[in-house]
Length: 324
Image (cartoon, rainbow, N blue to C red; front, side, top):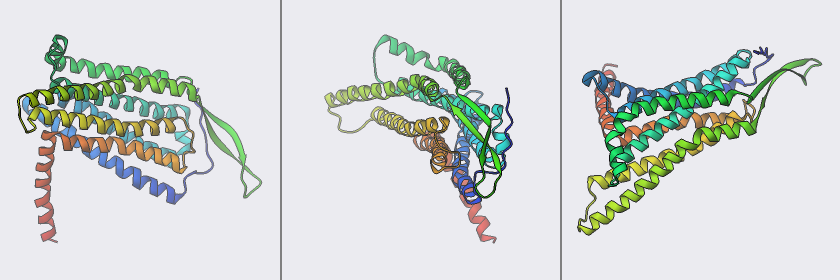
């Protein structure tokens, strides 16, 4: 049943609304630009060569999900602050919450597969099962990515059931007058929320931890092998190991902060216009932008493409300044 909640006033003060839009909007715009850049580069490669690399395919899925996530964050801020009566309709409220969960789960799965793919290609193990996986992982990846989408969607459907109940019939007195106003309250089943939230992130996070652990084991094996050959410099394989471990560690740190912020935001512990609620939204917006910047920095192909873009933009800016 859909409930329409007609609020008498906006809970956001004008200053708070402007500050929130500037901070979170800037983070989202940076994230959309960086992820849009990743999508553009991989799409251009796809169109030129009629094929896309496995890592490029994963980056496409990851970047599209993050563009959608940050777009929903912007829309949520706009609707919750300027159109609260529309935002608090039960179907709209559930759509936003469900979209945040679905897109966060998709992003986590895609990032986990990216880390797993790098591990399979970089790690130096001679076990027959691992060698078979190394040969076949590229062919399986498309199926694994779409499977992750359906798993995230299924988890999201279960997530929305019996989690939120929007109450629109609560009247509270207005201190400055003898009248009352209608106030919306949302009842959240935190126990169900915690269980389903942990179920959604458990497998991808385990994949990340195992990937990082096995990369460290592989690096130690490779280091011992290099030491026995009396080579005193770091070879490309060692650099690849270190880069993959560093990238996985960065993501885990960022995602832990994002997961805490997402859970607090989804649990409705804080009022929507409170400092802590805005901080949670700021962290949720900063995480995909920050990780995407790290992906561009650590990926040689993306880094070269970004430098070429800067080289093209810089002369245009200089030329524009000279004609002013």
